[in-house]
Length: 75
Image (cartoon, rainbow, N blue to C red; front, side, top):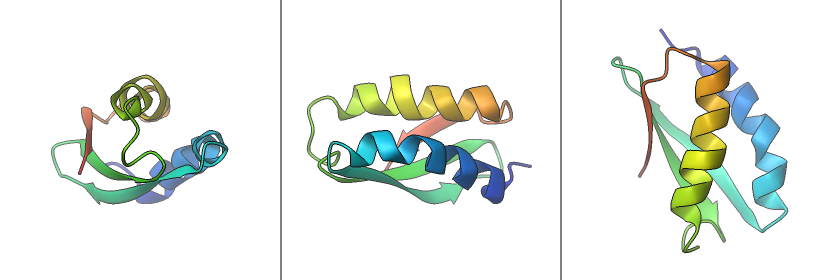
């Protein structure tokens, strides 16, 4: 099972990069089948590069630190 505390630690480590561009990320849900749902906030909500941020930034960081994660989804 994926630890919410560990997941929040990883999100906190990447949060300053998002906040430097007036954005942020919020954990919404961790499903039993290893899917992590997040919400992009601030400038990240409407940014045309938000998919790149989600995949290349958030997903890569989370999956590197927590191998039990199968996928990251923005909601």
